[in-house]
Length: 346
Image (cartoon, rainbow, N blue to C red; front, side):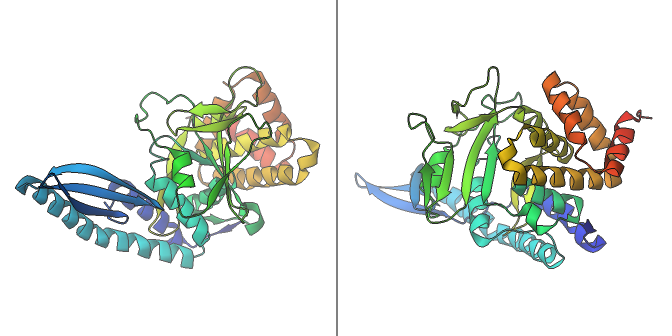
């Protein structure tokens, strides 16, 4: 495991702070349009997301409405400075060895952010989240462990208490973008799709949600995202402790990811749940868990203790598979992890 330089590592929290606390009201994709209706002039805000254009009525052509429009344009202009500063931070991070994504992936993640997917409770999971952890923790993972064509977005089918009551239409945002998404039919053709893929490419988006109750492959409708999701057992363990993170691309793309410690332990459980035919993915699960646990033991051991304590509150099957998954770690990492989680808080 290779660490980024100290100067590069310090850039990530700066970028995260700017994205969280100085959210630049970018005017990209926004414009004001005037229409003549029954002899009177009326103003609309036009929003362009890919090929989709929507207009929101602002009001008749009055001095107050014109002042509101000019104020918003002024905010867009002043935000250009903040965006430029964030773009510079992204550039410095990438130059320092931080993980970034392809141009198409950057467009996709920006689309998800602008559509409000993460504000509505969406959480990035899977190998893309693992790649984000590298920048968060200041380490460089082996490229083969972050390489993936699957973007996994998870969300609870019921919003948690305190979660903003915001709804988006994820399917519509993907299908009406200019990226060329198509729905991938479910194995059961009577079931709605939970997977979208860019036509002619391997890049895809999978929508996931926790499986509750009896085992079932039936897609579940997510009201917050207005789309269907594939139910996955024990996914609630990840979603219960999500946190903001930055994808190092464009001007920094703000999203949600699970706690790195929970992700690592969950990967050990996942490695035990995969069928024998998926041994390549199992090896990737274990490698990601091994690298994350090693990094956290070095810098944030308390996170692992909290994640372990939360795991102990999961169903017995979860802990059974977690303990079995521990055997896949190196002896040194396993011993250090168990010593750390057994250590009482002072």
